[in-house]
Length: 340
Image 1 (cartoon, rainbow, N blue to C red):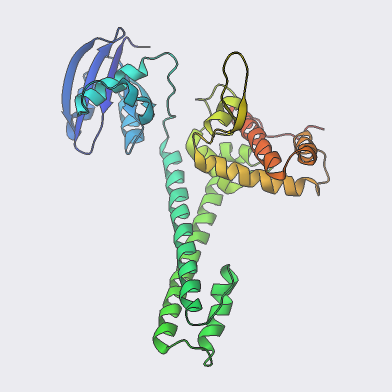
Image 2: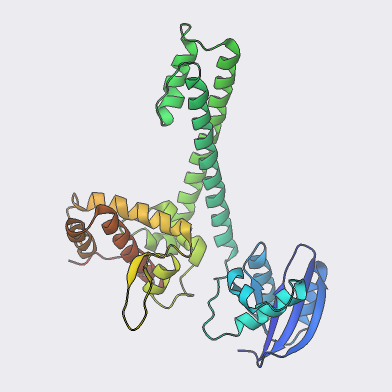
């Protein structure tokens, strides 16, 4: 590890760098134009370059890594406590460098191009699902104002709505019929786009070794596997499965004092998207567990817990165990094998 730390505050066009030694003394401050970043670090001695995890940080991390430097991404919320005086670019860069030198500091995994591509597909899919739901709710609300009650779900929009539009006995005006027909077309167009994205994501996961190993774990589907891979890669940034489960916010919240441990609900910290998908996957696995033919100790444990605790508690507990198992199969490069 280098004795020199460079805190780099990035922006669109103007970057600010603060060079600090291992004792926390600031050596130099430098304003760098976007076009000069590569040249600056190519001529700089080997250093640990620390960047806040934000927009374009993964790109710059890869660029600077290729120039022979060690690069770390630090969560922005960990930097705030180390910023002194007023907030400006140089103070931010200095706080980044100082925070990174703390021995117990945690960092964000640097994503590869493949991970960012998959993450982009997942985020576009998530937005389109939100748009589809918003349009469906608007169609149902507008139709209800004219006495047309539609059920929830795709069938109501794709099949029942056309029947309502052709019914001349309801109170829908010609203008409203045209408006609802246009909204239905927009809904179906977004639905087709989501199906295309699902196929694209499934194709990528089917050809990715990390995703294929994750898919062997009960409750992990293509979307779960793709999201986990896009977020953690091969899992090298985590010490063990519990570390990953804690990062997902699936471990108990502590309020301990005086040597007495008081545990509450889950912390809900870290990556909320992975946590949500793991819980949904655990709910599906728990439902399927009673119907399976082959024995599995993990699912047997979840079924036993379900008889002792509330169904939701058993689901979250299984999600915690799934997080540990999926990290293990990814990090150890071994597919999941059901224990009997």
